Length: 106
Image 1 (cartoon, rainbow, N blue to C red):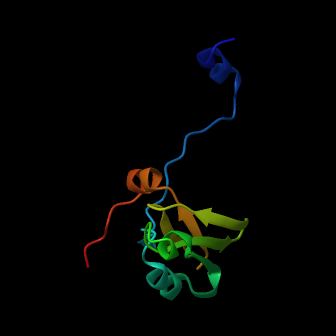
Image 2: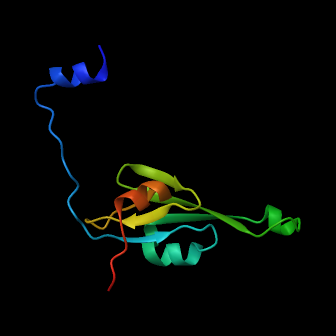
Image 3: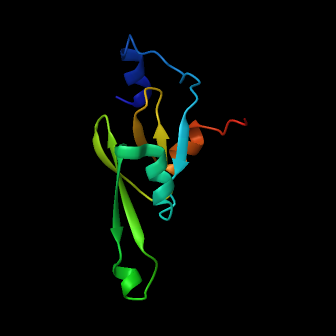
């Protein structure tokens, strides 16, 4: 059965659109751990790696873990750290963020 025929058999399927909700977010660049910590407070854990820096091969690096309602989640460089409508924090991939949100001019 193809996808179109499967949809015809789902009698209670409805379509929904996301409500416009204003959120706050900071993009994780890999080099702004202080900004992330000031934004998310105790909801973020920062781990520093000095290996490349000490070997003269690159800068000090930091990785962050966000304490979310669903458990701990690692944020990758480029991810946005979002503060949700109930004050919860979670990471969001850059491509998803840019498809879902646009900046509000204040």
